[in-house]
Amino acid sequence: MRLIMTMVAGLTLTFLLQPAWALDDEAQAAKDEGMRLYNAHQRSISTPYLEKAAEAGDSEAMYYLGEVNRLRHMGMNQAALDWYYQAAQHGDPHAMLRLFDGGACELGDVCPENGDDWPQAAFELTLPKAKAGDPEAMAALYDIYYYVKDPDEDEAMKWLRRAAEAGHVESMNLLGEIARNNEEGYDNDTERLEAAEVWFRKAAEAGYAPAMNNLASVLNHLDQPEEAWEWITKASEAGHINGRGWLAACSIEPDGEGMNLCRAAPDPEPAKGWAILRAMNEEVPGTSSERLLRVYGENVTPEQREEGEEMVDEWLNREPPLSYFPDKFGP
Image (cartoon, rainbow, N blue to C red):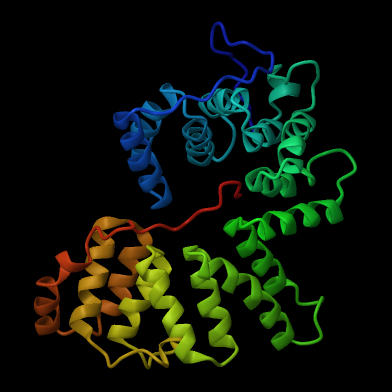
């Protein structure tokens, strides 16, 4: 990972917590649009909207501008460094971990105040908040504990569970994913999937779309097709792009190979499926929606396409908007 060494003139290198400012309506609208585009993997066009919110003092927008630049350049560059550093000054612990990953202190002399250890700075900032009952801080400690010296996996899991028990839906969903992927920790697949189901259901019932999507998959593997279909439909309604894609696919080709999730779907409606795919491709253009159009479009007749075109507006730009729901602290 290459770090650009030339620092912006006048950049302060001490770690200072800056006050967070409430956004005015215009800046908040810009942030909302920037995050919508980011979550739809339209990162390149999210930048001007996020910049407006960041310039108004929003630390979350600063962090995601760091993510946009890091992902675009497949590693730390000057713009990513600057935005992560600004977010860190506002107390964002994940921005501090990104600065550590990019070697900001070692290579660029961008260090926290009174030290050279960004993970330790994140830990010292976050632990008191977690102990005071802040679920976001509890969840952040799960990531931080894997970065500090002498990482403690048991402590990391303890705080992740505390965050979930405090109502943090992302932590509930992550505990479900950890259980689902732990093939050596359970006697059989059914036991493993049932353990995952508990956490996915908690988060899904709390309204978290990725957990709805995961719960549908687990229930399908546990041979509960009716409830699986109920939850994939709810995931679609909550804006999860995978849920919307299943709704379209099952409307067009429910009996195709690998289509077990369609077992409890209503009777096929190819025109409706085509309308959903067209709306997805317009709202979230890219390789994923284009692939779905190509794969399933072969099974839609010209007459069905024509009928579907009249229904596109019914599926376009619904609320909430379509999203991939990327992890904040992902790869």
